[in-house]
Length: 317
Image 1 (tube, rainbow, N blue to C red):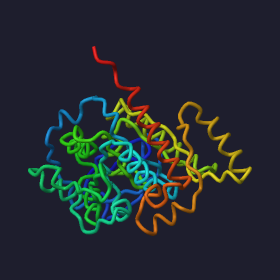
Image 2 (tube, one colour; image 1 turned 60 degrees about the vertical axis):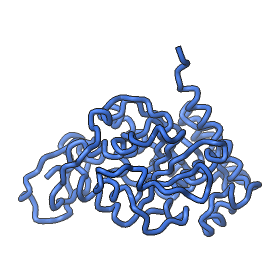
Image 3 (cartoon, rainbow, N blue to C red; image 1 turned 45 degrees about the vertical axis):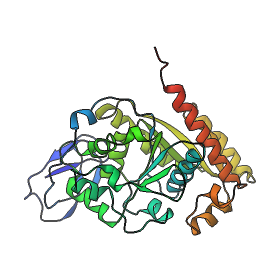
């Protein structure tokens, strides 16, 4: 069996008889990190459509992963509201729910829909067959569901497993202006695939110092991904849940901006009760209330994302 240190990404080959436990704690002999590992029944070999193309160092500026190892920082909220904002600006957008909790899928009113797991099991079918149209113009979804947990159990540690998502997205990415990938607050299979498939990472960060710990973890992981599987990947931090009425909150924002100078979006998402109200109704904030503070700020964020993407496109000869 193969286990992988979640800190330095070193792979270790262990004899299947090394332990009888299905879950155990291991210490990395490279970096000394203690991590939980599990004994898979059998890591399955992955069928790729075009592994060579998936491993190429190509620019995918329109593919953006939304990631932070800390929960509760508005990852799914940002993916949904940024996606719709881009669509309102006449961009064709695909949202990829790559979190087994399927919160993004539920937020768009989808239940029991075919998932990426189903698409991978039916490798001969087009990925288009598993992408569903949402009720919003120019916004599509590749759903998640309960069977997504099987991906980690079946493929994590298999040879080239981190290229699986990129391999499938390569077949549809020309159909969309932007692809946004929602990730869970963990590393393993899902986040590693999302970061390998993306050239940009949006890191939501709540305006408190404890949130910087999760940001630092993602930045370290991005550095490893850049060295191992995706040298083109870049990142930018988005500050969320800012309470402008709080002097302490504003002070923390300035200090964190200074800490990550040159690595942040100009747009900041403020605390807004409309976001919670919209979540209850499974709606993006801008659709629930066009005059909401957070909704208009996500529109500004979308404009900033478009400007960054356009600035990175080389001029035609």
